[in-house]
Length: 336
Ligand SMILES: Nc1ncnc2c1ncn2[C@@H]1O[C@H](COP(=O)(O)OP(=O)(O)O)[C@@H](O)[C@H]1O
Ligand SMILES: [Mg+2]
Image (cartoon, rainbow, N blue to C red; front, top):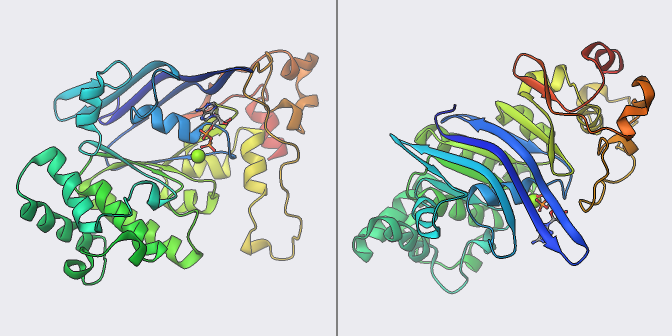
């Protein structure tokens, strides 16, 4: 058991007219305070859907969710999936918060930045408007908004993209949550601003000793900021490992493909940027098979065509390192 978050057998399914979309399938992982878990995978692999379930943000009338998500705070533990909406609302914004790629999805265009952060604070603490605004300015200052006391009275459209992202982070952190989920927080920003925002998130993590789930498709970001990594493919975790093990001892062909598709400065004359060919499968009626098999170059190494007829389980292959693949550690080492 971890000291912050335990996800056990989490499934998220959307019933649709075409069939059931199984967006998250049997997810199991843990997170400690102060730790960063990266979730990586192509678009549509279930990263956001899983995170929204942890935050209790799905519409339960239109979503089938099963499994358990325990959030531990102090001596109390809450199981989010079965908790009442009221309980989850009390935790959200206080014990756990989420930031998104698009800050405008969290910021209201008609209220000043300061007023919105003050409101987020007052929701959990009560207190006067003046107290709230003082807290807002304090946190805007902490996220390095210049002239915070003045800019608190400005509106979202008066902020640049990077400053808006800082404001959204300030709003998420105003109540000092112990869990922060950052869903592609820098994807929409240019490279220099990206680096500044990630540095800010790291320093905020240290400041509040937060556990952070960092969703990204940028493996460079993962290498720099994550302690552990879950690689997702077609709604499932296909590999989970400490960050160094993931990079240097990858155990899943999909992870190998992702790593080969990043340009490397140390291999400047290697012009082959090996993108993974093919596309992920539909999440409706997935066959009993390895979901990655149609795109995998190493199926032939596995005997009797098992990859196309049996679904591999997520298995521990070495210490704290699991993979969902029939290849033996020796076989994968050979092709790595
Ligand atoms: N409300 C919904 N109804 C049906 N399918 C959905 C819904 N929300 C997400 N999905 C599907 O779930 C899958 C996972 O989505 P998502 O978690 O957003 O992917 P990503 O890894 O890019 O964050 C996708 O195939 C998406 O189309
Ligand atoms: Mg997403």
